[in-house]
Length: 168
Image 1 (spheres, one colour):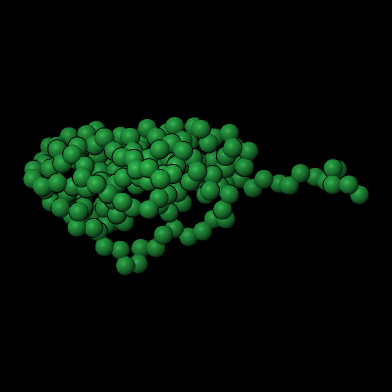
Image 2 (cartoon, helix red, strand yellow):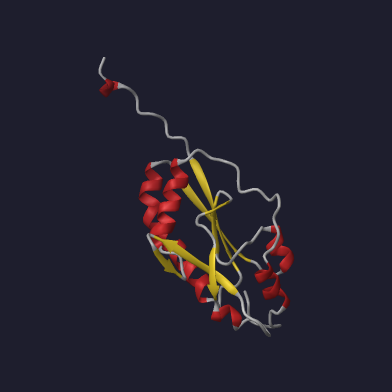
């Protein structure tokens, strides 16, 4: 018997939990860039995800305190996680706009490497690739919290954050 008459395989619905973790949504150009790129990537990937029976639930979190950063295991800002897993390796460089949020000192924020180039905001294509990879992979556990320590870079940011800096 030919496979042409076989019933189509059932698509099992699935939702990808996407988190955008940022230090600031108003001043930091990298955080704003990640926010815009995430929206564009979700829109661009929507037709393929829909065909796979996958929806996306995006949660945006402004990490306002050291305790909150520890709770969400923030390693750098901005961070995009899908189902609890960071979409890219961590690399950082000096972020002047986040430095404007501090009373003294400087802070390093994330840079994104994609296809051999470095970007201060995640390229839409990098996020689309991560969404499709996650949609095609079997669900797995989120990155573990064991051994997590808040990076000193972020501790300094929270210690020297300007009062009334206008952070969201």
